[in-house]
Length: 423
Image (cartoon, rainbow, N blue to C red; front, side, top):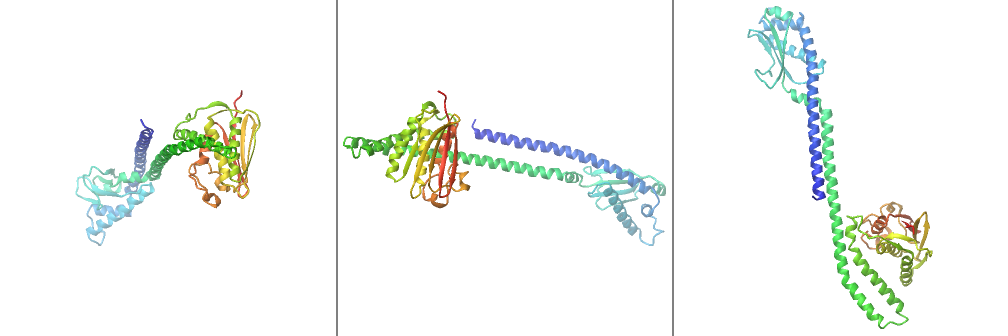
């Protein structure tokens, strides 16, 4: 199964798991909210029964309304009942708020075995979906009516009320869940985009190297023909062309392996190699090229063999890239110095130039793929931002490190540190 499918499955399972967990938390929260509501409504019922048991202004008014007695008030019976309904609603609302219940409700005050009753406009008969609480009253009102009197509280939107009570938990949880989904989706999209860029880069490298094979072959053939007519004057130049062409030919064969460097850590074939002779040969060839370009190049390499466990071609190519960069970004009187020495069982290879340097803000990104300094004289040198990234990758695969010190208009020093092999 492809990694992409695995990532998507893990992502979907994780999201479903979070939704299930959130749903269970919601159920628990609703149960707790209902328990708390029942506790509060129990306290409210006790308060209502106690307050309506006494003879007071409210119970006196309610008593006259439920017994149809309008002799005390100079008003019509309907007006008396409307006033009773209004004041009873205010009374019930106050008692509910005192116990932390703030939601829509309706009610009915009725005399049992009688048609006498007072009820709010929103009261609904025989609706099983509504939450109802029946209160049997005692005291003044039952005694006045000489029958049992009941009060029924009816809550119209109790589920919405419970959900509202959980908003402090639900809303942040929903926001975090959406944020997680968005961030994971963005990361997966970025990952696939990055993989697409790597694939495109590898395809470009593969196509380019195949296209280069034909001119390299032609240069090699022309060099052989020139060697048949060489003289002392042009011998050195023909030798340089031949060596560089052979190196380019090796590069073309080896660079085909670059596509695997992003996928495998064992893409290189390491062998124990006495590195000093190869480093000297590189410096000699680069010195000859530098003279033709008016660049002063010196090198200091000790005669110790410096045995490395390395892939020789890629490592030499990485060092050559650094030398070539020092030559590209040169100053008016360009000087390049290569030094190698042993420190703490590591081979230190430093390349120092007096070129245009690198701005401090760009130094931390200079080894990133496709990064290009877009200001100053560096912009005049064309490229794709792959060279230093390649150097960094090769050094890392050799279990080494690379350090950079640079100052604008003063130059740059790059030091490669590679572990030595005990012989």
